[in-house]
Image (cartoon, rainbow, N blue to C red; front, side, top):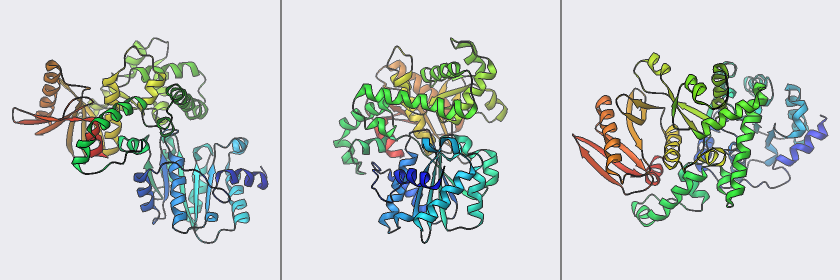
Length: 439
């Protein structure tokens, strides 16, 4: 590409001569980025495709403009621009940078955004050279694959980067997108209990992909989420890893999307899946999907690392909306949707999350530092006495094992209350109240 073509493309993505709509502010991430601005380190945003990484950085740039940073001192490069497709190499990076400097002539610090930079082989060397030469540039990077933070990358940029994982909307953010401002007073929650309960049920179905949340038409929303699912498989797995048997990859992704929250070994997946797939392919494809943030695996808690690694793992989806858009199902899967949403919130709140399984099973064991801090079970509703006994018995076993006195059952429907038994306290809390207290 020549310089004029490059500048023509950049003009469409940057604020230099036009206003760009940046949507609803995600204040939690903007607060973190603001803190990072005072450091020299490269800021790396990772997360599933379409979760809002690019928009968050565009929002961060608009906040800089409010602080009187000239628009000419910002450069946003989208490496998924089709015009760059045949030129994704380090020469392109050099040419873009020099064209920007020559045309815009920025004075002072430049704020550089490299969006989906993993498409440029060797990009980390280019970024490191900018950092090591102490050029007056603050670099932000986004990527839709966890291999952006691979050992090779980490070695090249050791001590030179700060990571910011980005997820689809949590429940608090979902309410903001639904034009409901959360207040801290308990009276506000009491007054809005019914509305919060209804919106939490909507959240469990819709999920948290920003554009999907803002799409009112249900059929259009499902088409959008189905396209996200396909794009993750195609752009972040097939193209990146040169997968040849695309249909089997898709079948496995649909299997996980349908059977999420269940525990599996890769060998068990091979046996129970209703399509032919080798054990090696199950292993590789599963890790490709995990690297692309489509799924994640939850390990069983054990004080023995060996036992922990050998035990079956539970599989979770990045977002409930994906399940409702693509999964093959005969029921509403309400319990699974609640459990999946709870897991995604816990991942953002705790350093380590596991499940516990001995005589009985506890859905989530949350560990911070050296200590297990919380135990959670998840149940859509607890009107049935037998269900309540099963959930409390599992938590009591878990509390005895971890030497805790309190634990929690998260429900989607029902009232908040506490149960005291055998010297233990179990809180039963509606999802909306728990999620707002967590985030």
